[in-house]
Image (cartoon, rainbow, N blue to C red):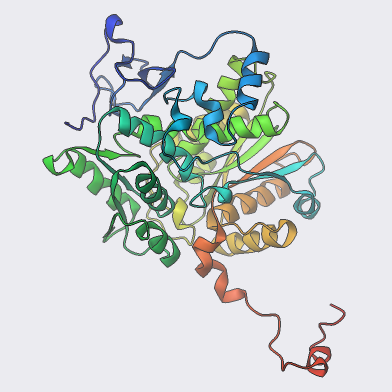
Length: 435
C-alpha cells in the first residue's frame, strides 16, 4: 500500500472511520482545525500543521466509566474506550505496557523540602523499561488497521527497543534507525529482538530527516514509521500516563507535574489526557501546572521559554541525556503554549546536575533512572529552589526509563565503597562497621 504523509480533507460523509480504531472518528489539524479521514498521514494539506486524533468519546455517567476502567486489565488497555484502538485490543498479541508504579517519594520529598506530597511516576517498569512501550503499542494497532508489514522509527534509543520488541510480539518485520553514537546498552537492547537496526552517521535530527525521505520513496512501501506517518496515533499513547496518574491519585489531577521534553509530544499529550478526563467528568475541573524539563546541552524549548519567544530555534545537541537530544523538537511551540497557559515553566539542568539527580533519586527512593529521569528530578529541585514549584502542593515527577540503559553517565563516579581483604580486621580498618 502507498505511504502518504499529507492528508486529504474529509467531507461530511467521510468523517467516519473506514477502519476500526474504536472511538477515533477522524484526524484533526492542530492549527486550523480541518478534519481528515483516519489514515497513515500526519500533516494537514491546507496549512501543513500537525494532525491529531479526534474522538467520539463515551457518553453517560462518569461513575459507570470509572467502574469499567477499574475493572479492566492492569495495563493501558483498561483505557481502550479513550484510545484509537479496537474494542478487542486486549485480546491481540501485545507487550501490554502501562499501569506502572506511582511511587510516593517521601524521602526525596524530605530532601527537596516538599510537604504537599511528591510522587514519581516510574515508567522504567514497562516491558522494555521505558515509556515508549505505551506509544508503540498504540502505533501497532494503527499499523494493523492500515495494512503495514514493517514497523520502523527514528530513535534516540528507547523507541528503537520498544519497536523491535513490539514488532516481534505482534508478528511484524522491524527496521529502525538510530544515531551511530548511542549508549551501547540501548544499541544492544534495540538489536536483540532480531529486527534490522541501522546506525546513521549524524544526530537524531539527521536520522529523522532520512526517515522522512524514505517514507516518500518506493523503498518505504508498506512501512509504518511509528513516529512519522503513524505519529497521530503513536502520540496518543502518552495520554495513558495522564489517565494512570489521575486514577492512581484517587481520580484527581496533580497540582504540578514535571515532564521531560524531547520532541515535546509526551508533554502535550499528557495535557490532552488531563483535559479529556475533565471533559468526561472523571476528575474535578481544577487548575494544574505543567513544567517541561530539558538538558542544558539540548534545550531549545527552555531557551525559547526563558527568552519569551514563541519560536523554538534548533540547537545542535551536546548532552549525556541522549534520549532527550532532539535539537529541533516538533512539538516545541505547543510545549511553550501549555507551560504558559497552565502557569508552569520550561527549565534545564547541566550534565553534572543530571548525574547528581540520578544518584539522589536512587539514594532516596531506590529508583535508578536513566538520564532523562535525572533531568526531571534535577529540574524539579531547581524550580523548587527558584520558587517556581510550590512545595506545599501535590507534585508528580516522571521517570521515563531505566538507569541500566545509561550506565555510562554514572559509571565514572560510582563504584565500590572499599576493596578489602576477606577478613574482619580489614573490614574494621575500612571504617565500614559503624557507617
